[in-house]
Amino acid sequence: MKISITLTGLLLAGNLLAQNTLILKPSAEPVKINKEIYGHFSEHLGTCIYEGIFVGEDSEIPNIDGFRTDVVAAFKELKVPVLRWPGGCFADTYHWKDGIGPREDRPSIVNVFWGGVTEDNSFGTHEFLNFCELIGTEPYLSINVGTGTVQEAVEWVEYVTSDNKSPMTDLRKKNGREAPWDVKFWGIGNENWGCGGDMAPDYYANIFRNYSSYIRGGDFQKIICGPSEDDTAWTETILSGLEGKQHLAQGVSMHYYTLPTADWSNKGSSTDFGEDMWFATLRNTMYVEDYIKQHLAIMDKYDPEGKIKLIVDEWGTWYDKLPGTKDGFLQQQNTVRDALVAGINLNIFNSHADRISMANIAQIVNVLQAVILTRGPEMVKTPTYYVFSMYNVHQDATLVPIELISERYEYQGEQIPAVTASASEKDGTVSITITNANPSKPITIKCQLGTEYKLVNSEIVTGREITDYNDFGKEEKVTISDFDPGRIKKQELQIEVPAHSVILIQLEQVG
Ligand code: AHR
Image (cartoon, protein in one colour):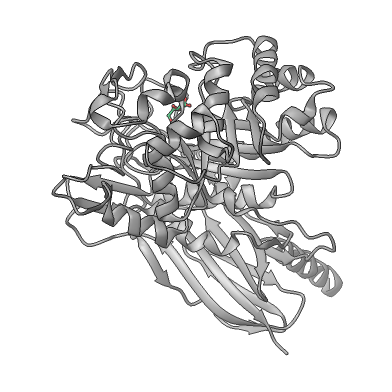
């Protein structure tokens, strides 16, 4: 009897030990978490560019050369590492020459994908690249493949990056820019399986080869349009289409949007939701890891040395538009649920930093899961902004692999891991980021550190309610606060991670 009680006790203790444990497992083969994993995306869509970034020099809204002063300051503080532009679907309708030269002479076009509004081209190549310089970010340009030509693309690359004397560089100089800009990242088409021309994958693969072979003259990273979600057939066909010509692509893009429902006409509200939509959103966002693995398996087959990287250049939540906003403007609010989505995705991207070289959340201002929202002269930083800000410590840090055993968060017979995490090391500081998806239950995680550390910083992003968000003219409900994770004992830290929260723990080795 005595023995059986002891055994039961041991088994129970064993289970408890196993559950909710995070073990740091530094690796002998260091992997860098590219800062570009913390990248953003800006499109001529709704009020992302006009109103959100660019208001023009004559605006009453304070600005620097037409760029909103408040937004510039917020992006500088956020350390935006890379910004993709001009789309999105818009990119495959965009003719860059429409957006250079005196503004009054620039032709306008109709933005056929987004609201049918008139695009006056007052924000063009110079404005975008100057803006990137102002906020200290790397530009990532999307080339028009859908309605453009190889010649137009070649001239754009030359106009922007060449140091030689040529008609294109003379034109650039005439338009006020003497020195070339340093643009490394070039996307060749966007969603060419859909809005970028409804192409078949083998047809697109050939078009990509054609464009890429003429885009020369720099140490460029040329990105082939990859799949959406779990479309492995697209990945397989474009990569087999590159056989023998893999050097033409340095990256494969992938897009994955998180919708609470599978119904595009009824995606659900960004602010008015209950636990059913909370659970569905977080479950759906976690699918991204399966998709990443599926596409990487195919990439491994065609590129066993892993030279071609995966670039998740559109990701984030997509809900129904806010009531009263324009069709095609994709305006939504951003709550604690979005903070969790951001934390979960960034943890997943960090964990695959050996193959994911960049990710760009959609979109940077006023569209979808934006980090900044503006209304006239007002601006708010969203919960997603604060998660990105807290996770900045991972930019260009060395990944510290972890083993994580998490309890499940169950809702109506379905379950997902309650906790996700990732860790990195930079300049002697280890940073661990953790999410708790359970909306009502704090979870105690035992972090086995494996060596003597002291705690140097800990922060949290959460709100009282899962639906909390930051609204114009009101006190912020969701921001970064200090957090007390307890004390390290015997190289172990037991952290009670509050319900519906994202946290950061930073440690320094002792001695
Ligand atoms: O981000 C909004 C749109 O989503 C982009 O224009 C397109 O690439 C994707 O379908």
